[in-house]
Image (cartoon, rainbow, N blue to C red; front, side):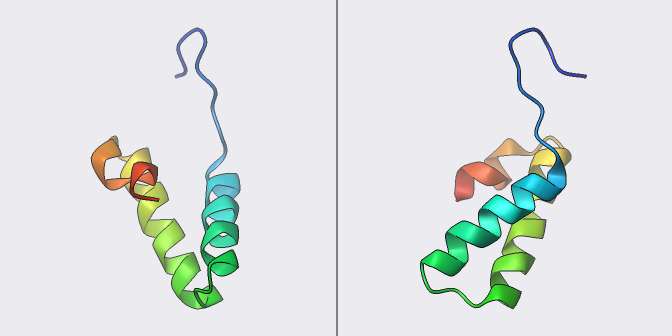
Length: 55
């Protein structure tokens, strides 16, 4: 549950964002999608050191 002032972003939107970032830098879509899923999973499990901040 989000606390006051926090923003909740849907997992699908996170994955889309990471894929977009990675493909724009030259990564192939398959690898970008795999990376996005792993980073999102890290955040969703509460391991923020292994999530989106790695991007």
